[in-house]
Length: 491
Image 1 (cartoon, rainbow, N blue to C red):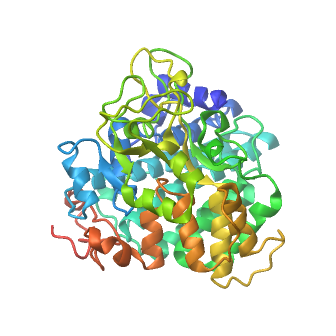
Image 2: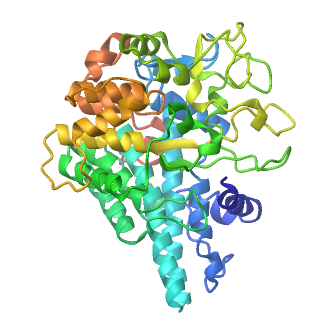
Image 3: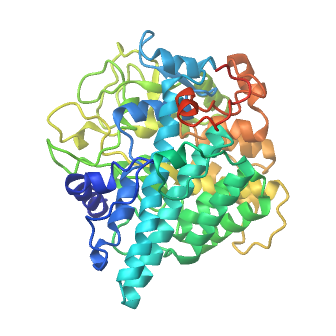
């Protein structure tokens, strides 16, 4: 499955935590602890950067609260009294003191910090290693770390707008004097990181299946291009991915989310999680699925129940005759899954996220550990096809080599869902993204970049010229007085 990459990350977590996993953004480079003459060590700082992307319980709650709950398809979930600060995100009453918003600021800057450390470590390896193969590995690992850093800044800019670009390890005093960069400057920075990665990172890795490759960087850059309305670049990159033939849709929609298909034919970017088949002890776990598990259900098929699909999403599927995707995306209270897991009729919510469903047969822990074998899917091939269709439909004029048209890309996604062919108008593409990528942290950001947020989310509390971005946290403005107040919010 994903054992070797996970095992390396787990080993680092066990023996080198102070060097690799607990690096705060204000940290300085360690002066000792890693032998830079050994080629076997080159990947270790990059592995630690991967580890920084996994979500602990608290951060998983904050992640789904901020990136998914403020949209028309998901509700807070859990119980009525639980998670009042998540409810603020559900009804757009959050402010700069909301702890989940601050947690996401810290989370993505922590990822950036780990990536910065990995990138700077490559300079030290480059000075110490003489073999041509070793130097090639150094540059490939540098590119890999830049993909991780680009991912962090992509989330920071679409969450907060203008943010500081911290591209190296800094002292606390340096960080406290940083100014913000404009969104366009941040996007330019992300483009540069991803261009560097595309130029050097391999098309695939022969050792660890889950490592990010050239196509990961291309897909992430194409996604960033949509936010810049850089239709030519989005079309060019997605066309190259399609033409490569390396990726394809899984035959069944459900298969794209199964544990056994992690890092499979449809996946370009995932965040790894595994209990390594162990019953106790420290493991490289990501709590993204656990935090969304059915609240009040029988162990071990039980979680915190946050970020639940709502009736609006169920009705949207029904209006399209979209039964296949509805049956996968929504776990329904009072039913039993095909694998035999019951969702009790006394659970707190009508629906739960079926895309993170993991059969209880995968739980080897000695206590409730629902979903801890589930990898987060960040970019799927279906998203690539829909990005291609959107870019072409928006008038991209770049030369294409895959033989695909916007219609063909759109209908390939629809065919798997059992839907008839249609024409790739922008509205049809928007609706297809809505159905295909529901509950995958895309909907809110899609509505904002399409200029449809106030139309769709206004009745839920969204305020134009305010809620397009989240407020820079008050605590961060106290640490760095150069950080501006985000317009529309009261500090």
